[in-house]
Length: 471
Image: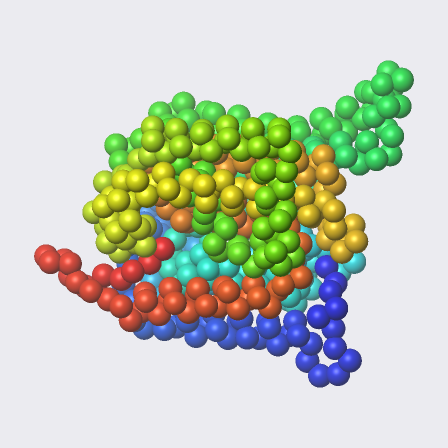
């Protein structure tokens, strides 16, 4: 996507300066983390030794405590073992640094370029300003310094989305299937990709009045039904394989099944709304706080029907919070995560607090629905390709809510990392002119979180090494 701020009559463009700055900061922070935290930390104590066993060509070993498949481990291990390079902690973590500084910005830049006016390799070499800013999203920035599965998982889903939007569905299925071997729940996002592509194809047919013609002629009906079937068909294979995996494994989680039993954790959706509203605040405020407040109020209270809907919604939220709130033992026992302090200092000592914030969840939901509506109203004017038109936007929103529900609600754990993919999909869907504010907001959050991680360390009695605060 071409924007005015990316060009310059002389000297370096804003995009070039931002690219150099983000790369430089990412590498410096990565090196600081490797110096300060040279050994596997937290979940890395499972991921890194397993990958190192693969590097030693021991493919029969499997740590029963690992809950996810070995897709990321194999991707990291095979190239290193092929060239006989030791799989050190820093090199394995470097996999995620490559994802965050090269792969994800390039994919996002391609996603914005629906005209395909620029070769794909140029997007990876010179990502757009929007893509560079999105790649500094706090969870991407933080976990690019460690060996967790979330960054690779995100890259796989975005890669599949890009290929599908370019009608390369078999390639999308290949990349999406790999992402499923990184995190099993990505099968849901592959279904989301298929659904949104079908919606886009139907929208194009509707725009060309093809649907009416199809209804008038049997030949037209079969011709264009065949087009939709050809979009859906490639995805049947990974969905069938996933069902077979569930039957073979006896569930979705590989290891520690007793600690990751599926639950009905409806407040997860409310936590996701709160998380996205805070981290994507500049996107919400793109039209200004007054416009947001006015638009959100009209969305929730503008007509008697909307008022009644809001009453039903807030009642449902209160019931979900009362009946389905879960505080997992892991969260209550581990003071290395920010969620621990929210629970210990707010919700546990003040039980009424979880009900008191429900109106805020509702207001944030109104704001997001209004913001998505603005995507429709200004999409054509601003030439942002991700706005799909009114009906498609409504259906896209329903698809996102449905898939987010499927990935979050069964999990008893409140993990900000689980919100990463739906948050990024939401951000990519929405146009914004406030990229400077967005970059400043992300920079502030990243500076605080990485500083706390590196500098605010403490010890656990009976444990070796330093403990650190993190997402």
